[in-house]
Image (spheres, rainbow, N blue to C red):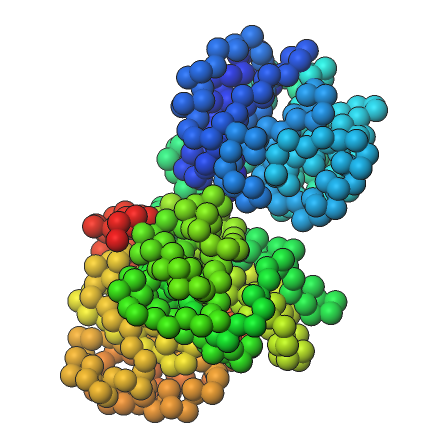
Length: 594
Ligand code: F6R
C-alpha cells in the first residue's frame, strides 16, 4: 500500500516530508520520492529506502512539498516508476495511492494528443490530465482531470507557480493534519502526529486545497464543512491504526483487500471476468504449486477449478515437487506465493518451466523474484502484510484463484453468474463478520486454555481446517491439526478426550449429511465441539457445544468467510496467552532458503 504525504508552511519542507514518509514505512514500500515546490519543482526519487534517498538531498530552501512511498502495482519498482510523477513541462507533480482502472485508455488518448510518458505506471496519467486541463486554477484542473478518471485514488498535486496543494480522495484514505501556520496531508495519521494531533478525515469524493493558513474542502463543486478530530494515540498505536497488533489490523483490512483484488475484473451487466491473462492454448491439465498457507489456498483452488472449469487440476507442495519426477505434458503451472520470494516455490516453478510447463505466478509483490521467472503474473493487490502470519494475502489468493477459474472459456453461464454476483458481495459479508467479532473472541480465549486442538472440515472446507490449524499453531503455540472430518475414525479418534476441543467448519453443501455424521461421532467421544457455521444453518446447534455464525455465501466461496473466522479465533487464543503475535518464534515472513 503506497503512502503519500504533503506539507505547506513556513518551515523547510524536506526534513518534514522525510520524517513523515518514515512514519509510513510500516506500510511497506519498494521505492520512494519527494517533490519540492516553490517557483519551480525539484523531484528526487529512487528505489530503496527513504533514509538512503534523503541522505543525498540538500534542497532546504522550500516550504512546500509532497512525498510518496510506492508499493508497486503497475510496473516494476524502478526510479522511473517511483512517484512523484510530473507532466511534460515538469511544472506539475503528483503523488497517488490507488489504482486507475482506465489508465490504458487515458494514456493512449494523451499520447495521441502529444503527451510523452516516462513511466509504466497508471498514476502518471493524472499528471498529464492535470496539465491538459490547467488553464485556470490548479484546483479546477485537478477536478477536471479526476472527472475523466475511473478507479480509486488518494492524490496530492502541486504546481511550480502555485502556493497551495490540491488533494482528493476516492476509496483510498487521506487525512489532513491541521497545524499552526502550516498544514499537512497524508495517507495515515502517524505521518502527521509529530507536527499536529488535529486531523480532518476526508470523505470519498472530497477535493481540498491546502495553503499555509487555510484548508478548504469541497465535494461535487460545493464547499463542505468537515470536523477536525483530536488524535489521542501515540505514534506506535497510530501505525497499527489503533489495533493492538498488525495481524488484527490486517484481518480487518480484508474487505478492502478483497475489493482491490477484484477491482476492474468483474462485469455484472453480463457476468464476465476479464483478467488480461491468457489460458495457454491446448492445455490438458493444471498444476498448482505453493508452500504453507499458500498451499492451503491452492488446495481450495483445485476444487474451484474442477467445479467451474472441469479441467483436471493437481496440487503439489513446492518443497516436495522439487524432489519429485513429475510428468508434465500440456500443463498450465500456477505457482502461488504472497511474497514471490519463497525459495521452494521459485525452485519448483523453474523445474516446471524446464519440463515444458506454461507458467503463471499469483503473487502480492510486483517485481518479486517469481515475476521474473513466470510467463505471466496475476497480482493480488492486498497491500503489504507486516504480521508474519498470512491473513489478507491468503484470502486474496483465493479471490485470484476464483477469478482465474471464472475467466476460463466455457464456464457454465448460470453458475458463473451466481458466483460473480456473490463475489461482488463478498467484501461486505466479510465486513459484517468483522463488525461483530465478540463471540469469536470469547471462543478464541476459551481455546487458549487447551494444549491440543483439532480442526475438521469436508470438501472445500477441508483445506480451511488445515489453514485454521496452521494459524492457531503458529501464533499461539497450541498444538493444532487439521483433518478431513471423515478421516478421524482412521486414527486421530485416539486423540479425542474432553481435553481435546474440535473446531468443526460446517457448510450447507453436498458434504452436509456425512459431515453431521462425523460431528456426532466426535460428540460421542466427549470432545468439546465448536462449529463455524452459516447463519442460515438452523440445525448445527443440536450437535455441538457452541456455534460461531458467519454470513451465508455460495458454497464455493465459503472458504473465504470461514477462514476469516478462524483467523480471529487463532488471534484471540494467542492474545489470551500473551504471545508475540506479529513475530512468532522461529518464523520469518519470507522464507528465502530451501
Ligand atoms: C503462514 C504463512 C506461511 C506462508 C509460506 C509461503 O501464515 O504465512 O505458511 O504461507 O511460508 O509463503 P509465500 O506465500 O510467500 O510463498
